[in-house]
Length: 211
Image (cartoon, rainbow, N blue to C red):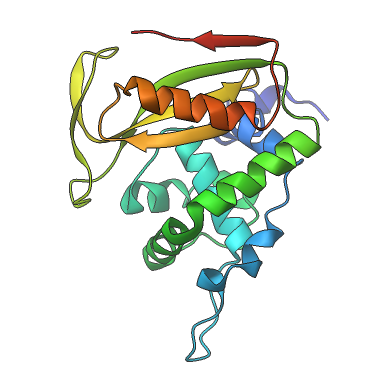
């Protein structure tokens, strides 16, 4: 079969751009079925079942967050992309209500889920011996009453949302994190996140980015 006619086809290019991302490679190593053990993801007491499994929704959110896509509408719009929702394991794209409900439920147990995923990554040898600590911006919709107006000195612009101090491995897998009111994290926060990371495994190198 000749592949030449496919080279300039947008859908084919989109597919290969997505399958080359780190998130899909990560999905091959991590199991998300443990999410069904959390009560917040159980069917409603009225007997109504969920339209999508928590594991599918989690993969969808990880994909979106990796691409800096936040908020109910932007996430729902991204997951309407056929290649994306198929790659994340959906049998059909989730509705806006499904995205909203999952994000609300996720907020109650996100710390436990993050710890569980880090343990899986460490157990399966996905972490290397170089750790990087840096702060980043997490942008949200104006409807988020807990967020605030922040300044990003790297981009020299203001944004609405939060800051987040992250320690990741050289493969950019986050292993410890803490949200902050702004992108500039205080020293005690950086030290606390670093201690959490060192509890996972002892690196050879620790790289800290200072702005």
